[in-house]
Figure 1 (cartoon, rainbow, N blue to C red):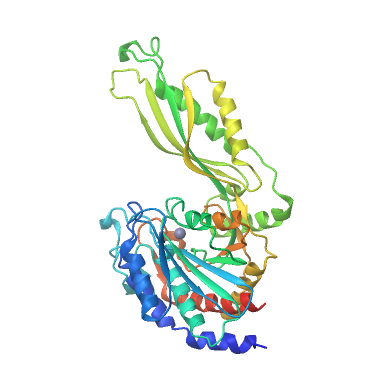
Figure 2 (tube, helix red, strand yellow; figure 1 turned 60 degrees about the vertical axis):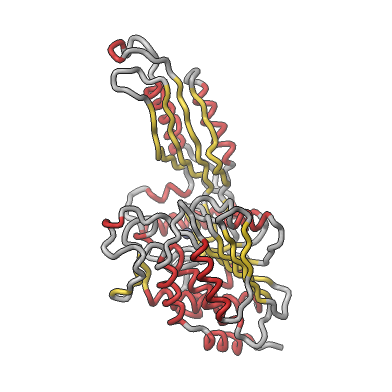
Length: 416
Ligand SMILES: [Zn+2]
């Protein structure tokens, strides 16, 4: 009989926390901005790290330029834990708006700086450290599969989704090292991206508004229809009602924007792009807009779409709604699941802190695992302010702490 306490002690001895910090630094120094999404160099870097530690891995490429890296540890036990992370980062944007260059990986005043340090090369570094520590154990009480993917920041179609569609990967629980800070997340809202098109009738600008039919004005009307979705109330699924309310409480405490907690149980709407008309003295005959709507828990995206289409039809002719290849349902893992309990216990063990798994408004690759029935939780180091923004950074102490939690989860999940 394997002794859990012994294994926990051993894996912690095997864990090289300074190496985790160095790994994060080195990965930040390899830009893997998506778009454009050239992931070869960063994937090669991770491969080299595994090779240097005599760990086997494979790189699969379902779509050219989108390598997926898989590494497996096979132990004595039925249970399989999946560890997942993405190697792409969102573009750094205007480099001169960064106080410290985005790909420097510099450590200043206990923070490691750079694009991806929080989202999510810090988390990936922790997973790599924990994976290596688990591999050095004389006997592992189950199986661990490390999955590092491209394309999370643009939808995961060529990364996690593609990989799971191949049908070769299954697991009893999945830990994604996405930025979460103190409270792991176990559910994400759904999302639906749309293109809205309006056609009008052109004419000389001097005759408007009597003559012609302005596509830009029609777009304005149609956008109002979308924004009215925000006013609508939806019923929360009974089994996670408490969880939604607790998550809203947390939003109230942490975010200083009054009413922001409503985003969890309402449809949110954002017009992100608009193009229309071609000349100031012409009545615009064409306009298009791209809209991002987020779907609350328990609501079918199709239902929201149906509603909005119905209202837009009432506006008359010259309106069209097209999908932008991004549609997902809100999804969650229940707090009672083994992987959730294991992460909560491990955080308590490592940091002494109690935590509460919460729901999140953004979407992530977690949905692809949950869609295949794999309970999934996200927990990773982060300073939330810099994510997808300028001056992204992560606390060096957190990189170490989270890697200790990951190592603990490996043992706790496989043995509990
Ligand atoms: Zn991410």
